[in-house]
Image 1 (cartoon, one colour):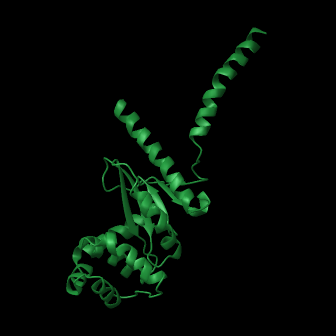
Image 2: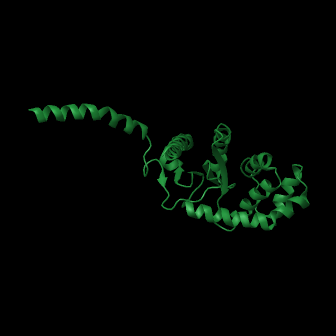
Length: 217
């Protein structure tokens, strides 16, 4: 009898803590997000990185931009938002290079949405350097400067590094979010694009708590 009472007391004491833990882990690995088997190095190890893997030719990425862009601007200072263009096939390399060229020319904020709009709203495929150079020139970017950046060693190197990073993530579709090089999130598992951001918020907090706990030891 005494053992039975002790068991009931322990069960009652443990249950609330189990419930709290279950509620805290509202998103589960393997169900709502995937754990990357070998973590990929982040740009700034002192911050929690969120990396959006995208392709300018992807209609879902175009739709996602309307929510991920504003969301990225609400992130706290300890979160580093990055983007990496995917390259599944040769024609996607031009779209990756134009992203890095725009960054090098410090026009990424203005030209990122323009490239998306031109391809999806205006229905221009932007398949080569000449088409891209004309687009940038039409928006006030010196054509010669664009071509120089587009063909520079730096942009070509960043393109290769980005491709390697995406392969390390194990991404096979776009858009996807990768949190701190450890967790991969897709709309397929989260029920939609807003769900991707909800899971990203959860994983950011998970990483923040882990970093705080590590520093406290």
